[in-house]
Image (cartoon, rainbow over all chains, first blue to last red; front, side, top):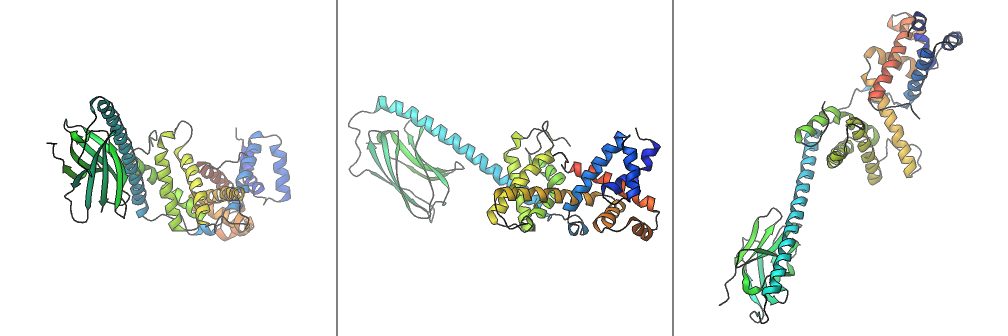
Length: 223
Length: 175
């Protein structure tokens, strides 16, 4: 409840809070707030504000509110968009790796049943040279192994830092992952294994992290 | 503004930026003393906020409070990473506790400066002349052509308005 008397003390409340009241004003206010909880609470609140005032540097106030450049809104949206895209790529990559792993496990189980001894390959392995765009060279040597098909892969000219998957497709159309790698500035020699018998392999191909085919070569069926 | 899931779309990010971006920027600028760094801090704040958007619960606090908690950490990280402390450095000592205290001090400084900007011209003038310039009430009153009582009343209402503005900016005198 604010009485008329309280109203009269408002100016003094501000002055006392700022430490700028005359002694007789302070005494009069003291006498009033001894019996007025409302003004006592208000003095406490205003004194806390007054205590915060010296933290300010008024030169920061004089120039008005600084505004960021108009481009900042676009930059913020751009940064968030980049982050969103990176998260999608990471999610897609996890899904792709999980899918490839699941496929490889399934193929390995089938291979245990189907692979028979004597699954030979030409001496020195089966050579594959990829037909590519300029600036990109790649070849592979495929060898049969107990674990499936070993792929010795040589490549240069892929996007440095990009993620790539090497796949073999079996005669039944299933794709089996041989492995993943990152593009580098230097030519790369990579050794991978796909859990697919070489005699079943009909295609070797490479995809990037957007699932685009960047290298592709058909393999001849064994005679 | 509905802020249940405020950062899950481009429109949401745009709206949150429009509501809080300039304030975050001014806080970062006040803390770092460099417009470029301040803009970087705001971008980083929004990236972190977006990454943690699922953890924001508007039942637990305001979006502004949450964003200021993030920008505060971003400012500390940028200060550490770049050793840029023109506004934060006060005493030459350098350790995490001091930096933390400095950031707290800069937060209050920024809140007071921002709140002063939000006052009416009359109220701001009253506080600047009487408090910051330490001028006697009657001098200021005479210069403005108003009774001393009116001047005192303006200072009182200016302090009341300051308190409201400060509280809106997350300031609290709870210790």
